[in-house]
Length: 211
Image 1 (cartoon, rainbow, N blue to C red):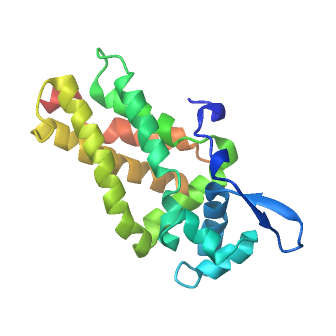
Image 2: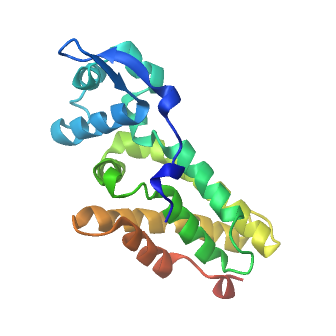
């Protein structure tokens, strides 16, 4: 499992703001997203405004829009960095390993931010699973991940990215992720990596059965 120190450093995205007590404070895109997610789950996604989110962390509405085009985008604050880590881990994997094993390991490594981020990650998962406005954006994100998976499997199997097996693995990856997240959010004592690993093992077609 990747250590927290390997995570993308968001310090360059930090801006100085003033908290509600007038003291100097600092926030980041990730912290703003975490606060927004808490409000969404407490008060409802539609009922929470950008002004509510900005006030919660003591920033201006303008500062919010420096980070996010819409309030639904806060859920995907780490998505680009996660996808890049996923791609790197895939292509660093052992070519002798089954592609399904490589994908499962890289996926878990990319999305597991450690126990310190459990609240943020659980909130994100709940919103993706339950909120239509967030799910609408999810289709675009999922397509990016499927493309990376299909291209990787195609390279490892000397086939085209739109061939049957790469496409099957790409779609199964997203389905297994959704199932793992659903199982994880349903059990407060569950371990994120274990839930994903179990679903990947059950749902990803292995090479010997996928040709």
